[in-house]
Length: 260
Image 1 (cartoon, rainbow, N blue to C red):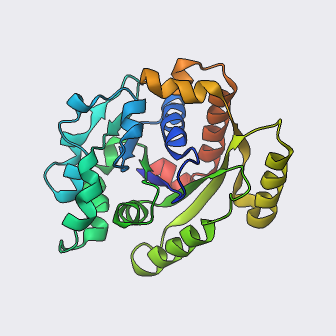
Image 2: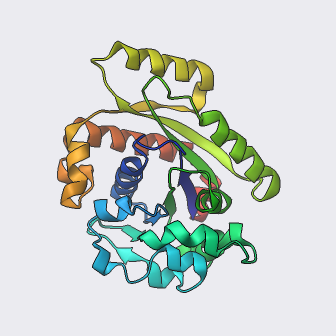
């Protein structure tokens, strides 16, 4: 199972929207996809129509050892897409895990137990670089960074990349950066083009060619408990996420795909 953490400690960059719609797009291409909601806000769970009453077990239970992966997984309305939902208890997990042995590897161990049931696992991280995000980076093979097309786009990215280097050095030497996805692209705003050009000049080929536009349908879809790709598959946002999924699949290691 290929594991990809979707992380950016800056909030409001379209991280959860990317996680939901990229997971849906991958499932639509025939990949058995698992989405781990590791954000205490639980927006990825809500955006896929998983109500709080349906979250008997969650990623919190997974981390503290009160549930197995099989118990925590919920099938979504999207064929081939499953989710481990999140609850607000996750916000206290970092404190509860302080004295737990191998606290940085809790998610990795849980995913190792059922690695053959899915082809791809996406992990939606909280907007921070705390223990939850560290667990995701230790468990993942690759990192995908959503980056908002605004003036301060690169602010904080260096901190995330420094964290990645530390994770590589101490816990997960195989962790790689799969790519940076430019989000909230507004063609009417000249500054957006300038920011996109600056990001590409700075980061080079790790930036995906596909850009995700600002799109009303992307914002509306979560209130209906649906990914935008199902809510309105013809909107520009949905088409962009399908194209991003195609790019991502091309970047996946062939050996890993064969083993998945």
